[in-house]
Length: 347
Ligand code: KG4
Ligand code: ZN
Image (cartoon, rainbow, N blue to C red):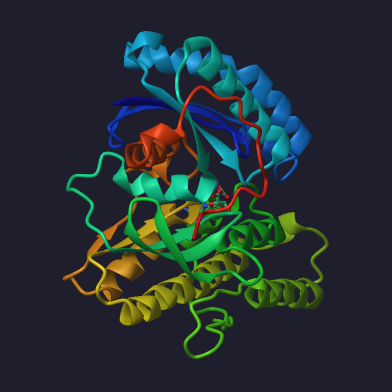
């Protein structure tokens, strides 16, 4: 079954065609990074206007790349939410029109569920349930227990910032730019992760929740102290060594918390066959390394097979759509759906 996926929840206009939830036949994306770099983050109105310009060319390119016509497409899957409402609407409108005009079943996908399915894309071996999943992005951060397709138990979530959001904010404090994750990871390569003693909030003894706001404030305090005592007037005057050391210390603190929480959860749910890492922060190589070191070799550890499936993409939406459809095909028909910022996972 070939599914066309559409994702426009934030600043990427993305289309993909995926066969049977795993084989990516085409994956096209128009990134807006260059535009949002100028403002240091995404301006929703600007993102929406770019989606309007990019959506149809990205769709055409996708069909061309797969060498397929509309008759070959069995269904359309689209991110319904959560995300920026003005961005989501471009994707859901496009998908609804395709569904109506081309008479294809329409499958609305929850964005985080989409990220979960990024680990099915081009997977070398068949994924085995039950699975413990750490989803960690700019807008969300949770630990999920997944016993079967589309069966999620929320076992932990962030009480304040998501880890990706903390990466983005710290990057802004250090003047490293947007998007924060890759910039911090790059600066950290030349930094000393022990240079600053930053807090690692593990919360209550049995808690699987996360909190990153204290860590973010500590980084801000280190920055302010340094700036005041060295009479620094603007971010450009910061020496590379300070930037790199603080980036490395921050990254290590986030990754210690994330990996220790996964280990705490694994101790509680040691019956799981696999542990998955998903979402934009799953692109972080140091985090992957820590998890590989800490997890026993008896459990299968997966992260998305390519960096392009870590951050927002449409292939994961097509994959999630496939497995949703397989469970209850009768639930999906030709439809006109609206976006929903409060569209949540069915726990
Ligand atoms: O999943 P995603 O593309 O969008 C959301 O659903 O939020 O995740 C974006 C987040 C951003 O906060 C970005 O800084 C972070 O993922 N990110 C990273 C890396 N690459 C992207 N964080 C840490 N290390 C990376 N290499
Ligand atoms: Zn995302």
